[in-house]
Image (cartoon, rainbow, N blue to C red):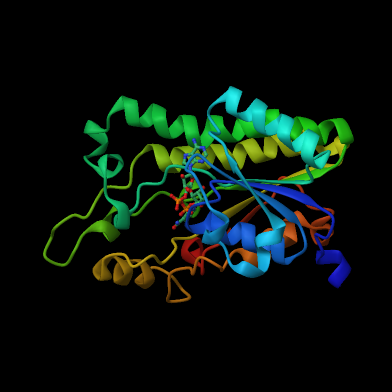
Amino acid sequence: MDKLFSLHGKIAIVTGAGGLLGKQHCIALAEAGAHVIAADIEKMNVEQFPENIHDKLSMVKLDVTDTASLSSVRERIISQFGGIDIIVNNAAINDMVERRDNTTQGTFEDYPLYLWKKVLDVNVTGVFLCCQYLGDIMEKKSSGTIINIASTYGVVAPDQSIYIKENGDRLMYKSPIYPTSKGAIIQFTKYLAAYWAQKNIRVNCISPGGVFADQDQEFVGNYIRKTPMGRMAQSDDFKGTLVFLASDASSYMTGANIIVDGGWTII
Ligand SMILES: NC(=O)c1ccc[n+]([C@@H]2O[C@H](COP(=O)([O-])OP(=O)(O)OC[C@H]3O[C@@H](n4cnc5c(N)ncnc54)[C@H](O)[C@@H]3O)[C@@H](O)[C@H]2O)c1
């Protein structure tokens, strides 16, 4: 069983590695034995990660929407590592209660076109480009596994009532583009899984539920009332699923969407 889940000798890349979940994805893959290229548009430092995996990490600056940036990372992967075995497409723009900014403002009727295009560019086109520029290395070797990070909101619609406080104040509206982008990722996963199935490249998807990050207490209460398991996710709740999909333990799985949400989408 250890061998089945082992990622020893594998090279992985995680996009959006500096974020809440990206960091945990890097830790999971490194703990399972992979060498992990931690890629983010923001500058990162190895000190952001636990010391026990420092020798298993390489930091890289990458904008998933920029083909020049992708070409340069592609060249570095080929010259430094000779190939890539695991791609985790995790980078995204997500409108969050805890980080209210211009992406969370306003109603559907007023949602600005420039934000729609910006989120679409990172969340969908970015995944397409990473698969094209980096998956292409896998295609040439006829081997690899790609894991796309979608969301429960790619499966069911946002419940806009969980963003309302007891006194009637609204914290935010979940944007129209975030669920749209995540639904697209679930379908893109199926497209590429079918397209590359004969090339021994498996493409799967994880749909996480909402992750606890010190959000407004009333929001957390609203969220957990709708969650059969009675809690939000912890940022490390997805590690096992990720290693499962990255390893030979899932060798006959492709095009799947594993929902990890404490039951949010079952009721
Ligand atoms: N946090 C949640 O509750 C939750 C729930 C379901 C799904 N998800 C999904 O999980 C993934 C990670 O979410 P998170 O909560 O860690 O988000 P986060 O905002 O903490 O991290 C996202 C990271 O992506 C990076 N990024 C943004 N644009 C980029 C670009 N153009 N190129 C490269 N990197 C870029 C950011 O710098 C950031 O480090 C996302 O795909 C998100 O949609 C999150």
